[in-house]
Length: 150
Image 1 (cartoon, rainbow, N blue to C red):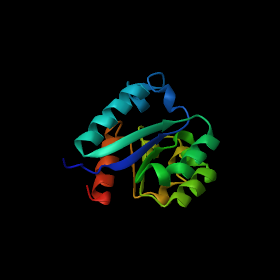
Image 2: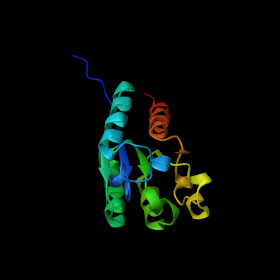
Image 3: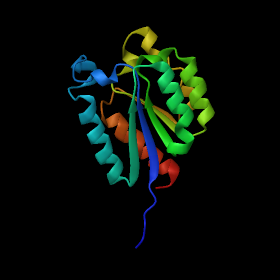
């Protein structure tokens, strides 16, 4: 029996992403978080990736989960939510893990308020996808699959 090695991708959702489905659908779409995660999981499986999910509204928990990633994952897709724009703690934790990372935002952050156009994690990421809705996660997975040699 041949076992296929799957690269492990951690998908981390930050503050308020548990409220998808209640937030402005013009920016965030109609899906709730479980529906989004089912779609991401389907894409990952089709690409031969193994995906796990994490969501918290507590910045310290997000940081601690990043600290644990080297034992859990080969790469990370992260949407820190509003923390993207100011959390140097998340930046520093991501820097420590030394894993390929891709930043994703459902909304077109570069077309919104000025403060949303700043990302303190972008310099640590292979790419940032925003304004593509759930398809941004698919693009992130495709990029990581190539990066990891799937």
